Picture 1 (cartoon, protein in one colour):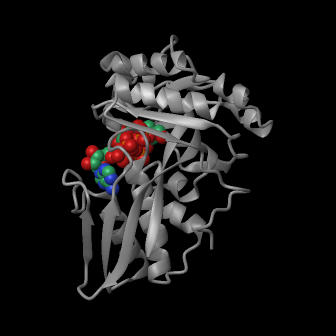
Picture 2 (cartoon, protein in one colour):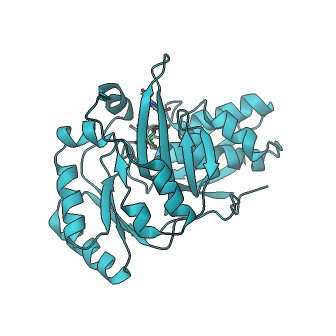
Length: 294
Ligand SMILES: C[C@@](CO)(OP(=O)(O)O)[C@H](O)COP(=O)(O)OP(=O)(O)OC[C@H]1O[C@@H](n2ccc(N)nc2=O)[C@H](O)[C@@H]1O
Ligand SMILES: Nc1ncnc2c1ncn2[C@@H]1O[C@H](COP(=O)(O)OP(=O)(O)O)[C@@H](O)[C@H]1O
């Protein structure tokens, strides 16, 4: 069984406050993009979880979110047979693109199908939050408002057609570090999440791009000024707007014209500012349903 685990960007990311358990209350507009890791999954003769990947720096033990998701499904559904999973990574790692969370979400969906567990999508999303705050959204996919710690989801109308330039500088950022360093104060500029939601409902691309904002930039950009440089370059090369995704350091630029996006992609590659550069488009759900829905 082959599964695609798509990356996400945060079109808007607001943090409202800190909870007693250390997690933060967020309001985010999430968007899946057509960039994905691939998982090949099959039952194995030997019991247990057998994980391999194409990248030697990705762990294959219980610290891999794929392993944890497979184990959670085995425990929840009483699966006693073994499973072999090969993870082909494409999504940049520790990049703010939910690569690991999406791999975990795909594993939940895949295990459910392979072992005929019969769990609903909502149940998989409930299980997913035990692995990470973004996992339920990665099961849902498409355009969504994420609240709570990211697990309370509202499906939104699909993002209007556009091109998305992705640039990941050669640094990795820990999500935990960014949240724990965040200092919410009177200078914090909170993005207009409700206005962005309205713009999505109106199918108004510029209404969306005008409202792009991410409070986590306040931590990541001072630590890694190259993030700001990449944003400025993308805008100078024709992006309608550009911003950091999640906790960073990946920057995405939104383009309303394919030719301009291709040219900017070329220039970004030549600039040497980024280790990884991709040009992609939104992956949209329609009425909250995707090809994977039961
Ligand atoms: C910032 C975001 C934006 O979409 O994405 P990434 O940059 O990771 O892609 C998410 O909120 C990341 O979600 P996720 O990466 O699933 O978080 P988890 O693994 O559950 O948590 C990692 C750490 O981040 C902090 N954390 C996470 C989510 C949240 N709402 N509040 C937090 O304070 C906690 O310190 C936690 O220990
Ligand atoms: N399947 C996975 N893919 C990538 N990283 C993983 C995976 N499972 C666990 N990790 C670990 O999680 C950390 C963050 O991974 P990732 O999900 O790529 O971050 P982000 O959510 O910021 O994009 C990495 O340092 C990596 O070692």
